[in-house]
Length: 269
Image 1 (cartoon, rainbow, N blue to C red):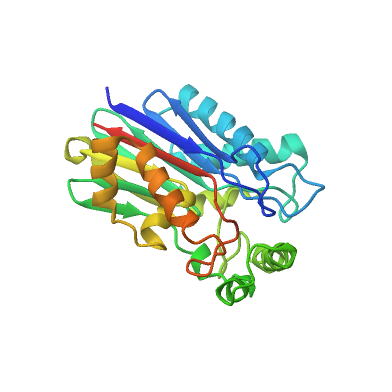
Image 2: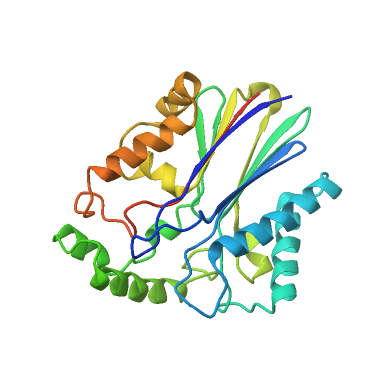
């Protein structure tokens, strides 16, 4: 039976206010789910965290009832069910990343949709990541922050304007793919599998943690695993948070919020 350790911490809203985390982690028999609900820019839609929670529940039920089915089929069915149950339509729905790790006696599988990576140590790190969102134009708010504009009301307006442009590229070729109200997005997920006997550990992260590797350069994935093994997964979250506290105006690392939600899962086989 694999050993599973989870660490989570809430970030802040666009205006710096405290609110519940929009990341969701669920552990089911022989699988782990990690979803990162996108912060909603619209008051007329439920939060990304609410959507992520509902989608995770649908996924967990399907994984438990039919663990032999293809992961993309299970995800497509869950997206369809949540969309139908809430009357969501493409472009008029909250959204979420999805990361799934599933295993049996022979194989460990990974599925990643949008920017919540999975890293398998076999024993060297094999990173399963979806980088398409990183190539979508993010708007001018990053330039504002680099110029010293800080996390002001003008910053919030700039992020909202950027999000409107980014949303126009959601779930289409040349843009990026994410769980929303398009079941076919599940077919666009990044997939990988490994022989069970080859996998030592697996790490799953929301982008509030993976930014420590990809954007801040605080450590590489081997160092992340070492830190987890030595001090527990919360130590990784703390290291990222400490770095952000040293950049309170986002001038060094321009980002939408001072602190994003954080979720990290370590699976030891």
